[in-house]
Length: 82
Image (cartoon, rainbow, N blue to C red; front, side, top):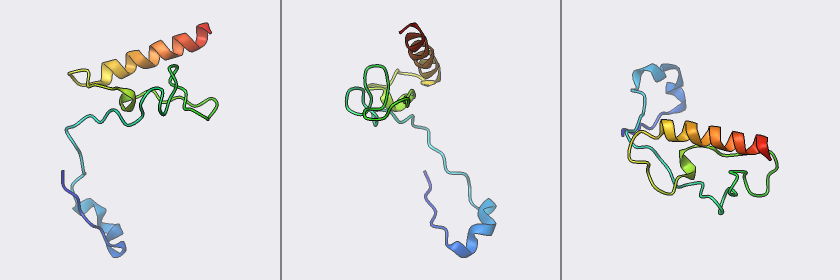
């Protein structure tokens, strides 16, 4: 990953710099029962859920897009049936 320091005078020419990207899928930063409850609701905040790869303890072993989509569907279905 390339990190570029940009001075305020160069904000007009951001197109000069390549788009930063990563090949890694970040996960584990929003752990269940530490940041969110088992229903993926943010602790201490009503009506806010975090449903993304940051709630995974371990990588699913492939691109996590399908896993995140199924998690969202499962949590949405659990909310509707409650």
